[in-house]
Image 1 (cartoon, rainbow, N blue to C red):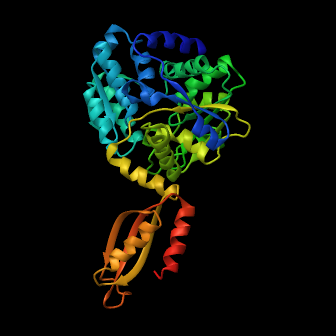
Image 2: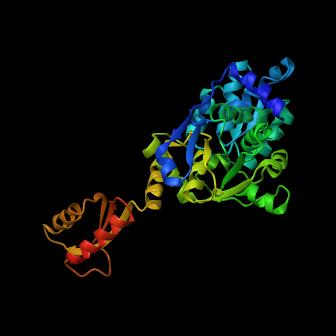
Image 3: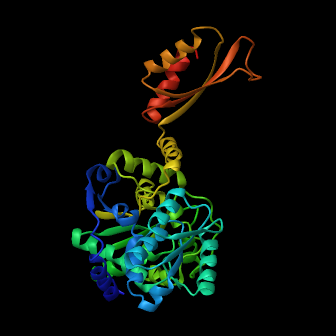
Length: 394
């Protein structure tokens, strides 16, 4: 595999530039190890998927290119295939789950792909795509179960070793397993002692379940912010590599993924999608092995649905204790609400929403129940506010 990855690096160098590897002093202080970020969210099409897609498509014969290609993807592989196909003059058809973020559907069409929506989840779209490939004589481009696709992703591992030769750990998102298989093959092939840690969303832990079972198994997944790595079953080829080369695989919760997206926005000014944020979420949940000194977090993509971003930020604020809801009863007379808001302002809290509940059955006549959503500094600030408000008689 290492030789394939080196060949892929040469192929990709014609059309793609290496992505930045940046050091974060703030994240290093927070999590206790030297933290570097591999910014695949800044790659062409907004994710690492352009690498594997182009490497695979560039290997097709002229006759195969004439027939056209098809694939299945929840978004990032879709854009990668559509972009690579357009660059090589190949017609592409992309089957996406109906739940795919609209931003990824629009981007895929903009790159020249014909988008077909089918099924609620990736696995249903995948089955439909393979059926269409057979009926239309199209070349199927696997999202992860392919040596050339994995080799394209593995070029990231070579870049990391070039940019940070003394790295001792790399943390990688896992969906179908193509990204971590390629990176692990590249890095372990050159530097055996480097630790490779995979991260999944707890809502879709197919790799973890497969490792426990000793073979790829299907899991019942739930909706997740990390839609880019939400697959029911890890690949058979990728699983074999993961089992051999990956040191640990951990899972992270939805609230932490949201908090990680928020932390990237606030601290690093980076837009990162849920699948890309799981590596930081693993550090936030202290799920990474002890003893790591110099780690690279692979930020796999930045194609987040902007309509979801507000909800994600709110969930992240909740996780960090920076939103507070208080409920109180006040006299339904002029000046009561002004006194309440003045007392809140005195505590340096920001009022986001105020809701009156005049119909509340447990509220006396002549009074109204008020619900207030506040932005606060954190749990300690919230505690002080609660104490002071009670002391003022609320």
